[in-house]
Structures are given as structure tokens and as C-alpha cells.
Image (tube, rainbow over all chains, first blue to last red):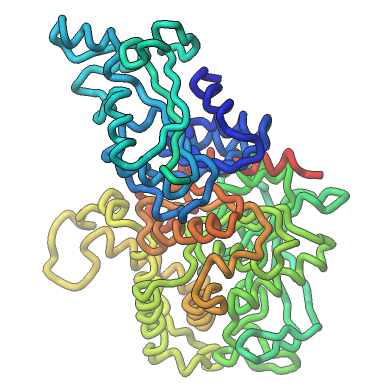
Length: 201
Length: 381
């Protein structure tokens, strides 16, 4: 399993309920169901990945996350709502983050950090839009239309009265977390992983 | 039939019939004193009767869901694309049952059969049956076949509505509910189309208030019109454009009202063919059954409450170009199921075939269906 998914799996309490927004082939849901008795539903848009989910007996709903969660889910339906490597490709990430905390008690998000030093170098010194291992597309064909940095995301959370419970950064292999990454996450962290809830909950 | 039977067909099958002499109380208040049910089965029932699957047919369907009745048959059963060895509903694994619903015209008691002990047809006096009544009669057949529960009940369109009703009325006797291209209830537009179809039949001078069989005639024009109208709603704008465009049969305009465009020719052909195989009173009945279906009605118009007692696992599928029972209708079902914590998967299949897509061998549809059914096969006790 991808290491960011392993970190997420670590954060989720056994026996809880979760919604996986953009669940892909259902890897995380399957792992959590089989190992942690987590009762989950996935949302996915890709037909091939949905076929895999069905084969693995994952409850999956074919949906476009840009349509929001309103048409299926009422308030407080889940313990956790997870969105892994999807936020940056959404039409309105801010609205989706709100939606996550409407239907779930806690949200977990991972996204590529735009302020990662290689990206900064490519743009700042080279003068080109960054193309890195975690952001492999060219500017003209990238699905990632709303890129942000750790600072940006945390500013959004502050504005929305969201309390960050946990934060970690990893590299594109999602495996290493070096001292530099821990000291200067917004510079050396390639992928950010956050767990958060609404303030006062 | 093709010269050689395809290996993934159930092959030559026959319709069977079962007589029920215990009266069936109907939702309309009337009682059917006795009746026959025509049905077909494919595959073998295992020793513990745990591999049985019920297929529910749609408006103009019948018990002949797969295979061929004889080597002379031009076409196989209506769901040949999904039922057979190696197909999603794999007859090597499952015992498949499909019956002609009450009020039908293919052997089960209905308007075109004789009243018990009399020499007259039921005709227009056959009581209006509902989806609930059908499910009750299907349940009786299930018990008579020595089956105490269905591994799955599966149906498309009006068939999908029967599946939903099964999960409400017999929650402990259905493990999986596969609801395809269905709707929790008809929209005003759906009912309007049904009403025009009914008026076409009712206003045919050969209808004779429904007693046409005694007059040795059939309301040919009315039934044909009803089918032509229905057929338009089963296809999509895109599929019609792709199939016919504005192609002319003779390559030129004739400035008259005879068939000129290919689509006219197609619709007339469909209409004519339908008249030969279907009964007008049955068509009236089945459209009413559709109009009346609304399981939420008894639960304060809340579908979630209506479904709350279900214990089955649900698989819901819809098709993007279906405007008769659009994906939005299926999403309503899914939303209700999620609200009351039912296990459900929902797939919206990209297809341009309109409502008829559920009968088509669309690869993504077959893959999803196949994957789901494969797990059921593995679960057989």
C-alpha cells in the first residue's frame, strides 16, 4: 500500500466509519475493512477503478466529487472523510473541505505541496512551471488546477474555523520523513497529510 | 437461431407452468381464486437451494429470459446478453428462475386466458395487479420450487421495481438486490407517456371495451401506436441519430405520408411485430402497475423509511442516456439506502442506448455486473 495511505490507516480508529472521496481501486477501504473492521464507502468516477472496487466487495458510488456530497450524504454520517491526492484537482477545494466536515466528524486530506523546494527552484530560478515526481504533468494537461502549499491550506483552515489535529509530510515515494522535512515541512515536504475537525468539536 | 448454438447460451429451454389453487389476495381488494404461472429455469438448483436467483421482467418482457425455445427461433430470450454460461448471471453457478407476471400474456393467468371454469376470457375484467401482488406471487412460486430464499433478485426497469419491493416485503428471503435502470416511482412525464399509450389502445375501434378476443379481433392500430410511442422513450436522441439519422428509405423525398425516413420504417416494424406477440389488455394493465408503484407512499412519502427494513445488499445501476428512468431516479434510490445505512454500490454506466441499455452487451456494464455476481458465486454456502 502507498505509504500515505498507510499513514492514513494509522490515524483511523478501528471499528469506525469512513467515506473515501476518490477511493480509486479501493485499496485503503479494503485494507481498513480487512484489518481494522472499518465500515466504509468509496466515491469514485473512473469506471475501471469502480470495477476493481466491486470485485473487492467495496461499497462504491460512482460520483463526480465536484457535484458535492449533498445528493447522497446527510450531516454527520461518518467518523472520517478521507480525500487522498484529489483536493488539487477539484473545482472548489474550499467548498469540498467544508462538505467533508459536514458529513464527517473528522477530515483527512493529502495533497502535493506546491512550495516543495524543487518546484520553487524550477519556477523561481528556471522560470518554468514545476514538473516534479508528485506533479508530473505539464501546465497544459495537468488535472491539478488548484495547487496549494502547506501555508495556503493552513490559512484556509484558519478561515474556516478548522482545527488541525495532525500534520505530516512525506516525499513522493511516500515513505521517508527526514529531519529536514520535519523542520521545514513547507520547503522539504513533497506531500502533505492533514487530519482536522471543526473547532469546538 | 444461429446455425450453431453459441457456447455461452443456455441453449434450448422450455417454459413450464404451475397451477396455484390457493386464492391470492390482491392490493386492489379483489382476489384471484386460482391462477397459473408460466416460468422458465436455467442451471441447476444445488442441494441446499442456496444458489437460486430470481429474474424480474419489465413491461413487455416475459418468462423467456434466455436461450431458445426451438431451433426455429430467430431470437433468444430477452436477457441473453446477461444470462448464460460465463455471463454475469452464470448458469453454471446459479439456478435462475424467471416467471411471466400475473396479468401477462405469455402463459400466466391474465386478460388473454380463460376465467376459471368458464369459456370466456378474463379480458378487461382481469383485476389490476400491483408490483406488490407480483412479488407475492413470485414468493409463492419460490416456495413451490423448494427454495427458501433468493441469493439475488435481479431486474431492470419495472423489473428493478419488483426487486425493491422484494427487499421491503420479504427482507429475510433475499440476500442481494440488483436494481437496474429503475425508479422509486414514476414521474408525471412517465405517467403521461403511459396515458397516451393507453389512450391509443382504448380509442381503437377494435378494442371493444377490452372484449376484442370474443369478437375475434385485436386493437391492432392502438397497440401498435402504444408500442411505437414506448419505443421512442426507450431509445435516446443520440442512439436514434446514430441508427437512422435522417436516412431515406428510397433515397428521395416522396412528398406524402407513407414511410419515407428509416426511423419511420423501424418504428412501424417494431409496432407490427409487437402486435403479434403482445396483448393489448396486458399492456394497459402493466402500464397501470408502473404508474402505481410508489413504495414510499405508505411511509409518509419517505423512500428511506420504506427501505429501512431491508437487509439485502444492494447493487444499483443506471445508464447516462436513459431519460425514461434517468440516473437521477437511481440516485434517489441510492440516497435513501445510504440514509438508512444499507450496503449499496451504485454505478452510472456511460451508454448512448437510452433506457434499452440494460439489455445491451455494454462492456463496462457487463464487467461490473460480472464482478458483482462472481462474489455471489463465491459466497454460496
